[in-house]
Image: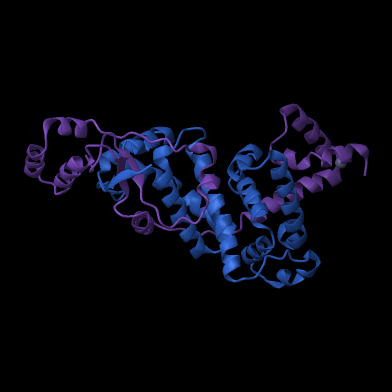
Amino acid sequence: MERDVRQGTFPIQGPSNGQRMVEMLVELTDAELIRRCQENDSSAVNELYRRYREKVYRIACRIVLDHDDALDVTQDVFIHVLKGIAAFRFQSSFSTWVTRVTVNVSIDWIRKRRRMKSVAFQPVELDGVETVAVKNDQAERVHDAFKLLDPEQRSCIILREIEGASYQEIADALGCSIGTVRSRIHRARGHLKRILKDVMVE
Amino acid sequence: MRITCLFVRSRIERFVDEELSSRASESIRSHVARCSSCKEEVRSLYALRRAVERLRVPRHDDGFWDEQWRAIVAKAGAPGLRLRRLRTAGATARRAIFAGSLAAAAILVVAGAVLITAPDRQQAQSSTYVPYIDFHVSTIDQQVLMGDHFSNAQYVSVSYNGQ
Ligand SMILES: [Zn+2]
């Protein structure tokens, strides 16, 4: 359908703009904020961003395993949010939706990165990863161990262990069945337990 | 391994993930309290959780996030939301009105209104505006991203131009 397109100004203000209004927005639910977004209330978009930016970044950091890449992912996620919010139909919570977008953008990012390096992902032979264990820094050890998981396993285990999501919430975020979530978490745990044995003992 | 242990192990992850009914959970709990090997399994699952929590995430202040927001808005196609509406017979006339309002001069709007016919103006005022954001950077399949949450339905908004 051909459309007549023109540009209005929809000022996206800094969150510091209008202290009283911001205070009021803080008390609204996500759903109420989305309705305001759909009425072109730009401060409501800001409030959603303020609420979810850290969650999005946190999940992205742990899936893409690179802090700078995670910032790019976070930007992409909110670009999708800006684009999609007008058509949001409340079939899930905003939180579920934004988690779903974050996981999808993160996994897509990893795949893109791999293609750029033109190195196909090869699951590492787990018996051969003792080298991982020589590093002293435990955070770095966990980081390296995570690199050995495939992106979907990573996503599932992070949503479960760090974000405290239920199997159903993870299934919704990844668009797969609860059975798939369970088996991904199980396999991820199996791998991590073997690699991180000594990190886990204390 | 005892039969009971095998049964418990098949449910032990769901137990630590709090995915069992309270009754099932209680029966696992009472077994774990008595069985050292199953207790060890539970302990290692919690230890793994703590290990996973060690993955670092840098902290950023509000100023940093504001900066990011500006970048997001710029990438989304500054200045952000735009308006789109169906092309109809009166489109050309309405474009004139809209251009006038963009110039932020009420006088111009009035002047523009004078230039067009009355029926056209009426049509313009009742026309439907659909907000959207111009979007260039996505490489992701929209269907995959949006799933069931979205339709292609047009959403009506009567506010535009920051009003
Ligand atoms: Zn036992």
